[in-house]
Image (cartoon, rainbow, N blue to C red; front, side, top):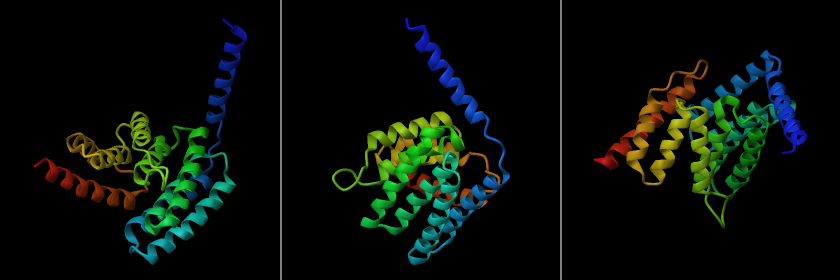
Length: 220
């Protein structure tokens, strides 16, 4: 047994944990992060589809990119840049969407390397969603096995979250596993409200209700 190697690994782990715990409170960072989250909800749920939504996401993507450049070591900034790029890809569609999806994947993977538990494991949820929504080879990098793995990891980090349960249910629905999807939708519907995220919660709950209706119809 190499005691020196084991001790060195333990010290490195403790230093990593201490480094994460030592992040000082930053009200300005938290305020901008919440503002970006709220702007995303407005773009995603309250802006008409088509050119208006694409324009909103284009502006928001630039804002999120600047935020990440100001805070390159903060997983939260990378996560939200990735979420916005993913949403922009969905709004844009076509071949241009794949480039945005790849950028989103890179940012979310970078966030996981910094702090996989940031924002209740949101990087796992968002990355897993990308993997089942993006086309597979040879067009894109979609991979349903990888999606399942990531979404399950997200549930381990945040088992009661509205997003973790909704997106795993949506994945199961796309797989045709309707009976397995229903309990996750029911749990998502019971998730607590998120302060400051009222528009996002309202939009997500509408999606939960719509998907639940589809699942129940399939099971009828």
